[in-house]
Length: 212
Length: 212
DNA sequence: AGGTGTGAACACTTTCACAGCA
DNA sequence: TGCTGTGAAAGTGTTCACACCT
Image (cartoon, chains in turn yellow, orange, red, green):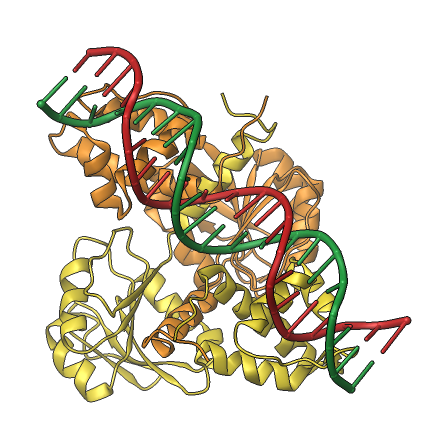
């Protein structure tokens, strides 16, 4: 028996979690779907529907207990355990991502870094020694890598992903502007900043409302 | 008279454009919706429907002329002219974005950089002198800034956006993990890398298919 | 009262299937 | 013939409205 949960629902859950952690840090012991919706920029019905796919976490007439709901959402998203992540590409974007503290805060630990630049291979970043992509298979196996953050220029992306997947990686966060081909069972999330800017350009261009 | 175009359609158009520019660089003088769909990871019907919102660009029995269609898509997305962009936040992520060549290639020109760090203010990056956010209004006016890339730590985001918008900015590409409040007529696109990783974690966790 | 959980109504998107033109 | 452009059908996601619990 399986119910499909939409991608938008998952994204919203992630957003709710951010807000809940904010509330946890503050005083609030309880929130209503109305409150949460307000802060997340959605509707109360949407919040309740999203949560209802996974269980009944609220108390009627009261709302949701903040720490309790936060725990549930973390569990739903699969954040109940740490994730072992490899960073592929130690260039500008790669190094920025490596230092991005919010990843670790949510349990995503960058345990390996790979880069083809001989000047970088062998150096150490906060205790992680940079390796050459030739060592992909060994690194994935030895470090127990589950997820790959792909921040390489683009031409090399597909070949590297194939090796990573063959070695056991099951998820890829892809910053390369290419359509990756992966076998079934492997999850890919694309981050395309040019696409976002273009969506913005479109909105601004067609601001008046109508399209020919 | 106004037809609404869905966000997903716009994202796909951006994707098509990337593929078309690839084809342009190669030999291909013409593509079918089938071809394009294959490379974009969608269906032929979807491609045709997406394009049909804006006109009839193909020839029946033949397909689409590549350079012609590329031009049309560029025009649709609002890339027919350059865009003046300001970068707010010259930290790790900000500096990576500044050097991201694909922005310029598509006509997004970073004409101003602002950062609160006194050690950075006054220095010059590829001909752009870093300014302090206090000068926001002057910078937006003098440099003709239309779009803001927001790459600041998060607490400061809302206040800075309000000033930028008041000064005339109409679009924001937001990397700060906060829900920005902007007046109607201002477009915001959020890029949340933690959310992407969480979507990945969710997929991997619920791989077997079913949800309680 | 007050706010959740949810089936049913609604809105939007994608897919189908085919008429129509090069 | 081959492939586009497009109404109609199917499928998905969102909103409504209210029964139900505390």
